[in-house]
Structure formats: C-alpha cells, structure tokens
Length: 607
Image 1 (cartoon, rainbow, N blue to C red):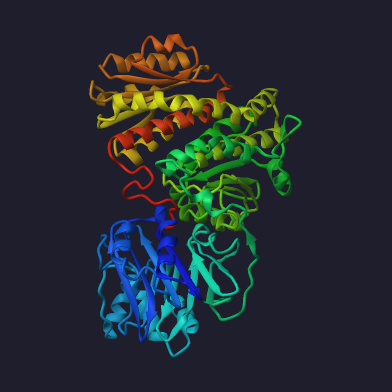
Image 2: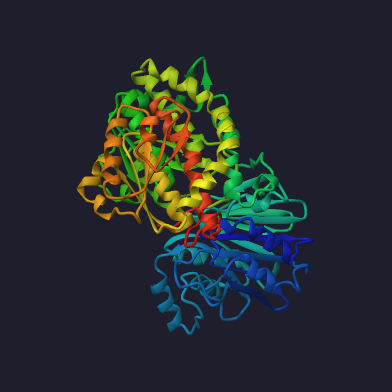
C-alpha cells in the first residue's frame, strides 16, 4: 500500500517527482524517497515522515534537471518507518535503485540465498531483495535482468527501476499491484494511479499482471516476463488535475463531502429511464441473473457496509437470499460456486487485493462477477464479467466519503435492475423516484447542517469511546458511522445491532461511554427506542440521527440530528453526510489530519 512515481525525459526536475508523490500521499506517508542516475551511481535521498520532510531535505536541489527518476511514499509492512527502510533501495554496486508497492512473500528465502552469495543488506524490507536480484542477473540489459528477477519473486508487486548505466531509462513491472504508464513526445511517466500523470497527459495504459514496461523519452515498450511483446489499450482520462486539489477547503475530506450532490448526479446519470433502472452494461449477464440461485457480495471496509445495504435490499425486493463476506474471509471459505452463482464485488479502487483474489476464485469455478468500482481500467474492472462504474472522480482523503455515497446510489440501481428481472415490487418505482431527487436533497442539507454538526462535535470530541447502534438498514449505517469516527479521530468506536446490547455490549456503558443511535422512522423504530431507553438507564448520553419532526425520539435522547423522510432503504444514503461530518469535525477538534489517518492507506493492495 505504497505510492510510486517515475519520470524520464527532457525537462524532468526533482521537484516534478516530489509533486507526483504529493498526489499519492494518501497511499502511504510513513516515509518517502527518490532516486535518479547521477554520473556512475544512483543518487538516493529519503526521509522518515510525510513528504514535507523529504521536500525540506531536497530544497537545495529541487530545481535540478535529471534524465530519469523514481520516487516512493511508503505505508510500512516489513520494517518500521526509518531512513534505512524507506524506499528506494539499492544494490551492492550503488548503480541500481528500486521502488516497490506490494509484498514479496518469499523474501526471507531470497535474502538468505543472496547473503550466501556475498550481498550486503541495509534494511528490514522485503523490497531490498529485488535490487540485489537484479544485480545478480544484470549483464548489460536492464529489462532482461528484471524479467529474470521476476521469475524468482512470489507475492504482489509494482516496481520501477533505474540503473546508472541507463540514465534515460526506467523499467517497471506489475503483478497484483496497480501501475499506470504514459508517454509524450519528450517524456515517459508512470505512477500507482493516474493523478500524478494528469499534469503531463490524459491518455494512459493500465499495465496488467506479468507486464514489463521499458520507458525512454517519447516511447514505451510493453513485454511479458517471457520477453514476448504485448499491447494494451489506451484509456483516456476525462477529469483534470484540478479535480484532485482542495479548492479552498481546509481538507480533502470536507471538500469531498461537499462534492456529494454532484457525485450522486454522476452516479445516476443515464441509469434511470421511465422510472426504472437502466444499466445497458448489465445486458450480457441478464441470463445469469435470471437463473441465479446464489448471490454473494464481496467487499472490504466501507464497501462492505454499502454491500450490507444491498444485501437487505435484494432480500426485500428481489426475492433472493444473499450472502455477504468481507473479502479477506471469502477468499478462504469453501463456498460452493457454479454457473448459477452471481458475485457482486465492490471496491472503490478496483485494486483491493483480497477482493481480487476472491473474484479470481469465482471465475475459476464458473460464477458470474459484477464489479462495482470507481477506477476505469482497474484490475477488478478488467477481470469481471461486467463493471458498473461509480463515476465519483478522484477521492484523495483516505476515509471514504463521496465514494460511499456513490456506491450506495449505484448499488440501489443494480438492486432495482435485478429486482425488475426477477420479482419487481411496486415499491421499487417509489424508491427510484426518490433516488432521482437525492442530489437536490443533499444540496439542501449540506448547505445548512455543517455548522450544527460542528457544534454537536464540540460536545463529544473529548470522549474516548463511542457505541453506534442500529437495526435493519440502520445497522450498516451504524457500522459506517463507527468506522468513520475511529479511523480519523482515533476514538474507540464500535457498532452493534441494537438488539444485541443486552447480550454483552451494554456492560460497557456508563456516563463516559456515549451512544450514537440510528433511528429512521421505519418498522423497527419502536424497537430501537426501547434499546435507547436501556442505554439511558446506564447513564450513557445518547445522540440520535432520526427523521425530521421525530419528537418521540427527541424526548428520550440528549442530542439529535434530523434527516429528511425517505423510503426505508434510502436512509443509509441520506444519513451518510451527517455521520461523515460528525467524524470529520471531531477529528479536527482533536488536532488530527482527517485526510491522512495514521496507519491507513487509501488503496489496500496487500493481504
């Protein structure tokens, strides 16, 4: 879960590499470094901490022009953050430098072999073995040496390599970790995602597993590990660099929350026609949907919470029994999958390692995979039977906000589409009609509620614990609210089905342990109110998010947030910005950077 950047060609400066890293800092910020050919060696500079620390170290050479360079921002896996463990890593000769995203699973075995051959290591990382292996195989042909090295590696990687003997060349490769490349007339560029490249070009190639890319000024060559030539389609990126900037907001997270009305419009555009879900991209899997006996949803983190909403929706309206798994468990279960199985795989990045491995198992067994992702050309998109894109644009903040909203909207459309094919109920048209109006509802609420949420956050930001509770569609909302709070404020927050309180969790509650109750005006509201009374009897303060005008809830809680009245399945959607803003303001009040929560990275490309 690291970010890599590479640039080669006329006019490339050290500062360009650092700028590229800054656009990838959401992928890791334990340490950062760069390397570039410099006379007969590679010059390596690195620093522990965020990219600003590296930038300060480079201030005297930031404008220096180089022939080629690679850069890295790290999310630590092997070895604590330190100067020694920071990338890039070099070989014994000092001529080779490597940056790496992923995990080399057999690095200990390789290290022992290389030590026996006389190599000296200076870090605890798995990555350093790559540099020494390339040194072993190098006989004047850098791409050939890298292809030989890849044969020895087990695990996941995206790597970029420079060599002092080839000062105007970068060689890169991938297996299981994302890599994007592109060229102009005078330069070549690569990165872990498209954001650092948009300053220079819009047409890119998404490199596939087993590809080796040689970049020189104005040209790139793609080959396979066996040396055979390969070609990949050009993908045009239609959003610009400004879309990945803060635009006057203090943090990306707040900016991205306020982008949610437009995100909803983009997610729904062209996907509702005559009051029904319209998904032409799904036509190829209509027979599979009609005959399906098993439906599985596979996702991680926030995507899993969105998937829980879809599970309940399909059971309510499509007459299906649906299973859902976090992907890290799904891939190891002995699930009986065949041609009558549909798997809906949800991943914002399309590169989530566990989700991809689960999808690959499904494909081997003959199941049908419907992918839901935000990234055009991502591995998940390429390896699934059909893909429905979120169209949310770039999300820089590590905590998912606008992509969660987009996921919910798209999953409702998919759920309505499947329900129409199998067992459409009259309520679907009402839900679709309300869904069309959601962008306007979000605009109205976002413009008025931010200040009130800030005032509420001031009442609760000093607590060390929080418990979120909900039932029905409210339970995924509770899970997502707790996740947002814990990942950016570092407050211990847990979520439970409200009916489970008396089976254990209620033992935690007292006046120092407040509760956040999800109370939509639905069929389970009376049950949730009873559970709230149980918490109040233990002296716990209660914040409730409830429907407009709900005086009944207001009378028994300490504080409440009111949301517009909608159909039951849509409450997770309409409540989401309130929960996100509550977590955001608490994080800021506690002095945290909500864009870069500790120990987390945006795209989880390792198991």
